[in-house]
Length: 333
Image 1 (tube, rainbow, N blue to C red):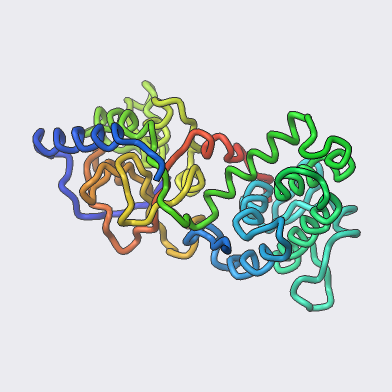
Image 2 (image 1 turned 180 degrees about the vertical axis):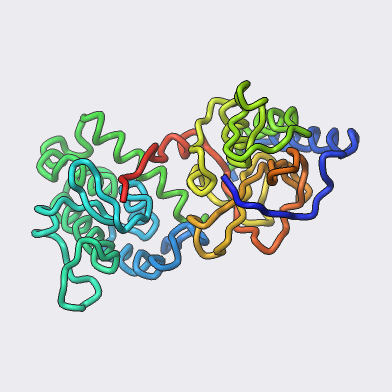
């Protein structure tokens, strides 16, 4: 969803010739699909108040990296330092009090181990990961996968089975975190094009001129109207990809191409804080040529708008695996 946000654009009265050019360009891009050190965090993927700590402690051992640590923390709590689960897992890193008593550390050196303090919770999560990695260091297979499996199923199970154990929950956990890791890492090479982009844009184009509705999901009861994230969710739903409802969660549904690497179908985001993806307030569907289709604000209609504005935050190239890896809910405060 979004707050009121006005950007100069060409409006709903776009000529059919312009629409036609965008459609041709989109399908041409889709037709040519192909695959395009140290791990750095993607711009703003980790809230600015935690970024330095995650970058530092994410390099604690060879099995860990900052993006992997960020993926775990996001999956556990959604960056909410006051999160509490029904199982009494607490804080940003969702430690059970008994586990914290054994594995929590004083990360900021203030003489206290505070489960609610991210300055202790983030280092403790990294320290615990690396401790587990040490237990399974001689097990065959990918060392990071084995570490995550040990986190979920225990190091004994990883040693017993010679790698990730054949437990559906554990295998799914490893896959989710490794997929989310891609969303938190700054891409080293180009990001592979999306195979569903053209059809998602085609869906959104059919909605041009539809009045905006805050909270709109396009249902019949809502007159087929959308808000910004409702439109992008529906566009990708039409191609079999289920995005979260809120824009700042949609940001983590894939890797993040740079501004000069955008392709039609990328989600483009706008934020009140250019260092924090959690402050994203608007999303649109990039169509090429510096334009997006978006549902801008109350009183406007779904239309083409320029993406270049002071609050432009970045983009996400949505993948089915990336969207599926996103947590459906986070623990409540």
